[in-house]
Length: 255
Ligand SMILES: NC(=O)c1ccc[n+]([C@@H]2O[C@H](COP(=O)([O-])OP(=O)(O)OC[C@H]3O[C@@H](n4cnc5c(N)ncnc54)[C@H](OP(=O)(O)O)[C@@H]3O)[C@@H](O)[C@H]2O)c1
Image (tube, rainbow, N blue to C red; front, side, top):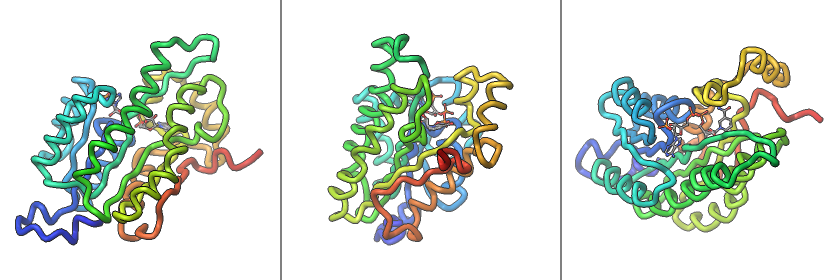
């Protein structure tokens, strides 16, 4: 962690700092909790007032909870001001905010297409761009992609493409940031038990059908994805850049 070696005299600045977008629920929230437990200063974002309020009351009191719509660039500017005012700089940027609203090609609306592209790709891209001046050299960037960007699922065209765009840029980004020793990697969750499944309205029988396709016969947890993010951010992954770690219980390995 680049932050451990910074030479600030204030002890608070000696702790590494992480920004987790979409950190109010699910995978992001589990990651924020894990990082905090491992000694990070943490900031999380979300946009829904209810999940923001819940995160504010349930996360440790020193976690910075910021309302910031990832689709709105002026929100992202304000987010960076808040984060830099609190932490000074960042050691980990976890770009995780995202949506997935499946629909067959024939039923995809322009509105839904734009919503996915604006958050999952454009929003992530400009959050990264705006965070870079605050990233410490030697820091780490982790992007949430998803196994659906490499394995087919009917109804997932827009979700897969909007996240797959992140995978496409990963090698170039890793090369661009290598001179600063900033490592850029991705995590690709398979079916993970988070509020997303409820938002999708997946029934119990639908969940059973999903489980039956997973070699481990269960959903992953947010904590299991969080462990991969924490690893990628750690010194243990200090020679790893431009890679995508799949956390999917074996899903997608077979024919
Ligand atoms: N769960 C899975 O099976 C799975 C599989 C593959 C990939 N993924 C990806 O993993 C990421 C996390 O998903 P999850 O399962 O943890 O889902 P989740 O519980 O729905 O969490 C999504 C997070 O993104 C935030 N978010 C949504 N729209 C936003 C916006 N416009 N601006 C800022 N934040 C916004 C949400 O905050 P609000 O509540 O405030 O909207 C929430 O904090 C997503 O990108 C998802 O596509 C999930």
